[in-house]
Length: 250
Image 1 (cartoon, rainbow, N blue to C red):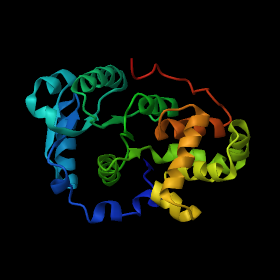
Image 2: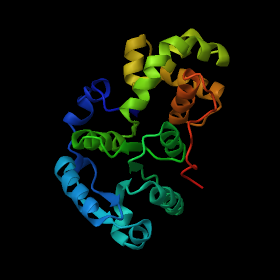
Image 3: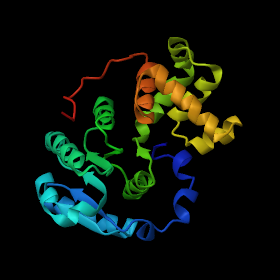
Image 4: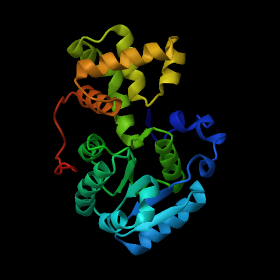
């Protein structure tokens, strides 16, 4: 599922309302941030919002050398853009050695859509701009903890504004069926399989089949890449990026 900071996603409080995250996840939230004041303030605020143990480290090296860091249920990588770029590559290498699927969320001042897309392609499960309200940050982390992917609201809203105008072009380019095109529109709105199935009056298994067919036609490996690829197409610039910073992963 793809999440955004809008009522459409977060109005589904049943995802979290009955779930005590402290009981569901015994591991800790790890924050990697070079600036001590920001690191500690962020940890203090998130501790109150999430009710989970918070571990903080100044860099990836300090985290990887501390045995307590191995219990991470989610890793929040923060800092300035260049430092994030280097740290993310290092972090992905460390996680690969673990052979453990630990979600990574990026905090950044940069809201460039190419930057966000590159981060998600590199494996990040969330991208949170630094001006995001704390309440939304907490909900984004909760979304990632239950298996979702958080994308900034402005990215999906820009896609929505062009979606109805350009969906036929997307349909024609990849020979989507009418049902697959309906599923594509729902994916761009961040809807889960259960919600898509309900709204389109089909079973969840049928939704999964349609999503697999869409991914095959787009030649992508997962749902996140499918949404990014479709968003590029409906903007009328397939394969092109805005003045792009270098990719965030090696």
